[in-house]
Length: 174
Image (cartoon, rainbow, N blue to C red; front, side):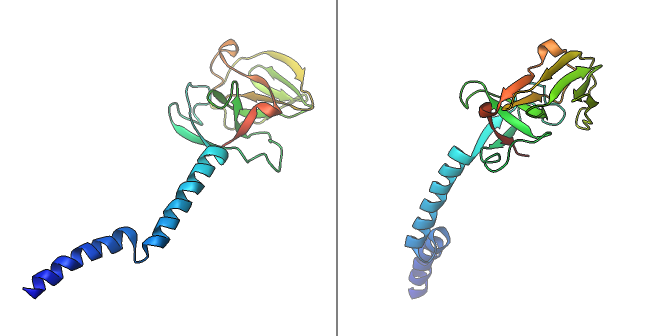
């Protein structure tokens, strides 16, 4: 009979040890720290977004979740080729585009190819060709030219163009 009592009292102790550990105070502190770090990271550093539309295909598939690193450009400016989130009205609605033109550069499209300062830009990520003809435009000191990877869409149906630096929320991860 003493074995049954002993076996019955060990099961809850074993279960408690598995769930909260040998030191419940330490476990509670770890959980609290994990919650605080998660809130800070997902509120201020990594912004979850969902791709809607086909302008970034095939690089990014529609309706797939991604994260925007809001600290990516804290110590360096955005670079050509970076996929960024561009704010239109707060962080609830954003565009995901690739930077192809940097401040001070001349950007144009001729026969569907991006032309930067008179030279055709090598864009291996563009899988669908286009026939865009867009006149050259010189970017300001705080402007970036952004466009999606899916260039098969007509130019009039594609959100593209100049984005001010303060509208670029961060770099898209994954």
